[in-house]
Amino acid sequence: MQSVLDIDLDFFLDEILYATDEPTRRPREQDYQVDSMEMALDFLQTQCGLDEKQPIPGFTCRQHKEVFFHWRRMLRKGTLKAPFEVIHIDAHADMGLGNNSCLYIAEDLLKEPAGRRRVPTGPESWELGDCNFIAYALACRWIGRLTYVTHPRWKDDIQWLHMKDFSTTSGFVQMKRFNPGFADDLSDFRDVKKLPFEAEPDIPLDITPRSEFRLGSRPDFLFISRSPNYTPASADRLFDRMKRFIGSGI
Image 1 (spheres, helix red, strand yellow):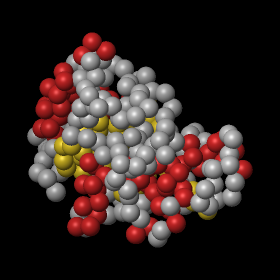
Image 2: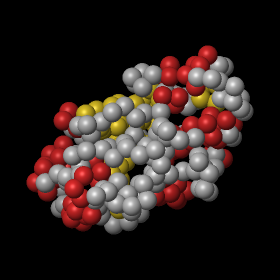
Image 3: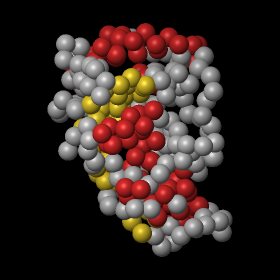
Image 4: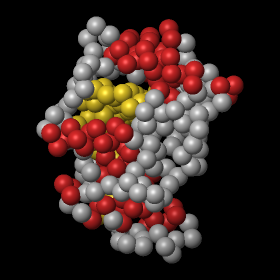
């Protein structure tokens, strides 16, 4: 199974920006402190095994959701083959907690054959975005194994509807297809656990704190996202340095 290392720049801030809606401007400098260059490079080189002298094929992205479209293009070219492993190093799980993408996935997307699942990119509340692109990649059956490396101040932001036994500690993602309108009459959304559903194949999920993470082998591809709506301008210096770990595009 091929492996993809996916890093978001906001992982290297002292605090996590949680927002109900996608932010539209850069965070204020006084609210967030970026890891020192030495501290960030130690994590990238020692714990991730990255080496500027041996760059890895991949891309830098402005917005994190762009990674999804790179994966789709690579899959169509045959450069990347599904299912692949994703090591997601990010301050956020990006599995759609807090927006309506989970309803769209459960009602509409999963009713289509895996190879024909089309992801919405319009202005709807369930459109693909920075906060849910991992959920959409899972729903398309691209990801066969997911490791989520969490920020030291992480609070559980995994979409529990997409987890086996509806539990974020089950160790497996399990996408579920429900009947259309399944949530319409629920006074408490947690009662969804009592409804019938069709389960997608289980996908192993390993949640690992930053301090405990060690990448065991060199990834096949590397993606680094700047995420300016989640990082102050002072983080750009680190982003520019991180570019050296990426080789030619794919």
